[in-house]
Length: 473
Ligand SMILES: *Cc1c(COP(=O)(O)O)cnc(C)c1O
Image (spheres, rainbow, N blue to C red):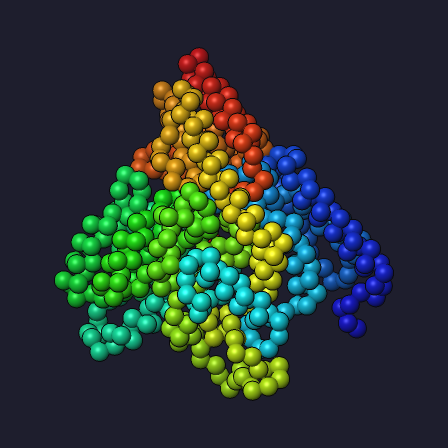
């Protein structure tokens, strides 16, 4: 007996009900608390024995609906934590179409490679990279980084195959760079310690002189410098490294220039950041996310690699059972398996492609520009409030600040953030800058309005006031 519905009409009814419930949720994204914890009852009901028999589709729909209030809250306009995108209803169309096709986008001759390659062509254009730029739509920047750095490592390893086999490959990133880079080094067998963490200047950007000195030191020890990883938007403060200076060093010293632009690369669309990101046109590889500032639903990221041959050489090793053919289903020039570690993979590119077609690049640009302006507005609110102080510059869309307490500065600011989250008013996160715990507000949210920032600041001042007076009593 197949797993298809016995009664398609009943299934159709449940599917329509599910769609309506999903649309209701999206339409009401501003309503209710930003976040609420999973109830004990719900958690308990999930821990049930392995089901042996079927559940009615009407019941399935109801059960799914009962889970929907307990997401992380990032669809709400006052979700400001970490770097999360808000997603968009347009994605639901692509997800439905994709689910009905059940595409394996790893190989062979069907519509998925055409859509995926078109997304890559569009992204090369957005980032100012050459037409032939190669790439994949992947789960996220973590995976994109692994793919890019594998290409970089293989290319440079081959170049140095006749030098001392004990010499180690080393790469460079700022001490503010994301942990996924160290993890990629680890997974590629390069060894985490061989990622040199370069100190930053007062703007949390990589110190270029320190970088040069570190490379020289490594060369003196006969190590093999192979890559510099620039950050276009650090996760703590949104700092953008001096990418042109890094590109110059890479060019002069024959090093691979990779950029982590998880959210920040998207700001190349925005008038406020275009100029500072112009060096993205010079990268050897770039990793960034669609599920952050592009507002595509989770998960979707992108890796772009300037030289298609280097990209292909890092992954293309097909055994006999995966051999392509001149014609038929096993035909087609582009098999994603030749460009990344996965064979079977979902049709993520479909929701990215649909999203871009549904909104157009101008609407995405508008979101990014507005979010940057909103971060600047928040900075002005903080500066205008005697109770608050800024802890870092605001180069992009992230604002780090705190409430000024006489004592217990870090723990009380931490408490403010916990209470904001638990009361469901807003969901910023925290980070540590030097010794200071900061309330960290990241705005990658097309639903956020200026009034949401007013609500946030008022709530912080209220909670801060309560915590201050408790101390004084
Ligand atoms: C989010 C983020 C990453 C990791 O990306 P994922 O999509 O979560 O894998 C890397 N670098 C920066 C700067 C980020 O913000």
